Length: 363
Ligand SMILES: Cc1cc2nc3c(=O)[nH]c(=O)nc-3n(C[C@H](O)[C@H](O)[C@H](O)COP(=O)(O)O)c2cc1C
Image 1 (cartoon, rainbow, N blue to C red):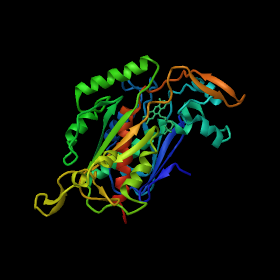
Image 2: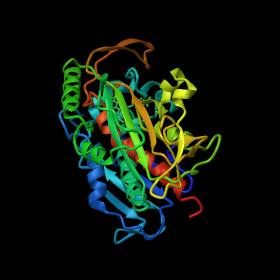
Image 3: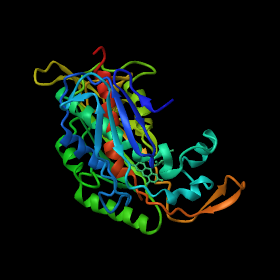
Image 4: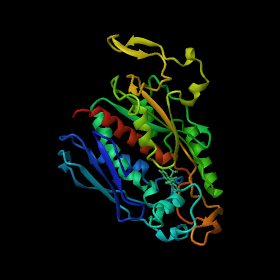
């Protein structure tokens, strides 16, 4: 089964888009950690639908209710179980999808895998609704990381080819990233925010959708964290990031561009730096903070590519799985014309969970 990830800190998410509730079980949080609920809810609002003109019209209060694992807001060592009720469901929108699968969505392979018993309402358990409890877990992990001196932040790097300003990989500006996170489109440049908002609105007007890239940074990690070969920082992050729906790819540091570079250009020179000039640092950060699956002590930098939303308002070619004939599909539900702005906190959440998992070794 694949609803869980992590080893020292294990997170399981459950529920479907239109089930009574969705939720998470977070096992392995050390006891005695006070969680700030105001901040958890503020983090979850960054992902919640209905926050802006460029997201789905579905409105969910996303109020988390903790069933276990906390005493007076402090972790007690027992798994934290949280549920979030689904309130704004319109299951009738999905009647057609029981037999006519949406191109680029999970409807068809899910129909085959589950023999037609899968919950198609709102995309069932493939829905991005499940990233709400993931964001609860991630928000808690972010608080624990902060206490351990680790900062994590993600922003929208581009949407529909419109790029936000570059960020220094050696000294990422976390203040700017955190300020960007407060906006409905978490980019640093206001000009680019407006251009992106216009591009998403135009796509929506045309009954279409657009994709983009989320870039994530983490600083304050010690060097040497992680495992080699199959269990490295990149391996585990990639597995968790692909748990966010609509992710198509991930690249670390210079990423795919490294393939076009010379060693002399790509290699990050080491030097003795830090306050006491005894910390091994690199002058550039093309390696994105990971070498051999282990952290180098430099900021972790990676990007995740998100595809354009599958559910678009234009008529599309599909098939009728029951009559086994070609069919036309017209989608009537409420959908995000671009998932990227809401995906940024999801990337931040899974990154925090994976990094905390590594940091909790032997705890
Ligand atoms: C925050 C967020 C919101 C999403 N909203 C929608 C949506 O409104 N409509 C849709 O078709 N897909 C949406 N998706 C993507 C689908 O859930 C996803 O494409 C689908 O489950 C198939 O999985 P795959 O794209 O990873 O292969 C969203 C994804 C994220 C991260």
